[in-house]
Length: 333
Image 1 (tube, rainbow, N blue to C red):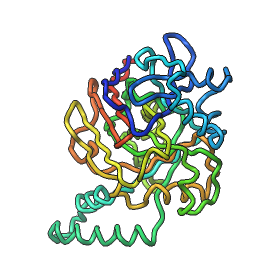
Image 2: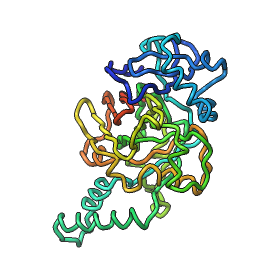
Image 3: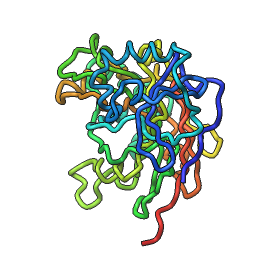
């Protein structure tokens, strides 16, 4: 089961985006999609029956000019998007996730987690937290950890909530998609390695973030974030050239039609370039890899309302489209 996308006058910013599609019972294939919902099978356009999105990104420097030409050529055969299923736009080899990267979110957490003997007014503690965020932005490093590609699912697929997940939560995030190998790149060069952007909802089971059996170990991201389908991705990969400023985009997540997250990427403590650069200082980023850049204030823990069977999440980012996923409780074993 999946939640079908709602029709829109313009699906995304720019003259085209990329998607991974499939017809009924057919194999998935990379496609060019126009803002009005027409598609071009890139296997035919590139005369490569084995082409997938990762292979396309591995030759991004030469592929991009050809994609621009295809998008502008009205004589190229098109098929309607409605005829296809939309999958996650890319199958990454590596997924880099970020925590505590939105200023207002972290300030809210600081104020909410008051020490028992701290009797200062909230305004004073908020001012203190704001100063800490200013210092962190200039002196500290991003907080990045590793996710599993097997958690990635499509932008309209149902999300199965595991029976063991006591507190499943949402986290909408702007995601950079790497377009060429990057290792130890500087922030001023980092965006040159980004092919485009997409949307991720980095679901988390809050009950298993911290180990109960051995608290000194700390966080357990394997357990809390990597159940199958816990990273709905897409729908589109929008080329970086179509996004004027990734540090000035609006993220909005609605739960059953009610807005829960609504924030600009301006609020990020470490911007996209710094996130990509930081990840590359240790790892070698590869074409198709994902760099999730953190989630703003307004998750379920903030509202005291976690995900339940039947909930529908709708996540959007300026220029990148909308993903829409339904939560389904795991069937009894």
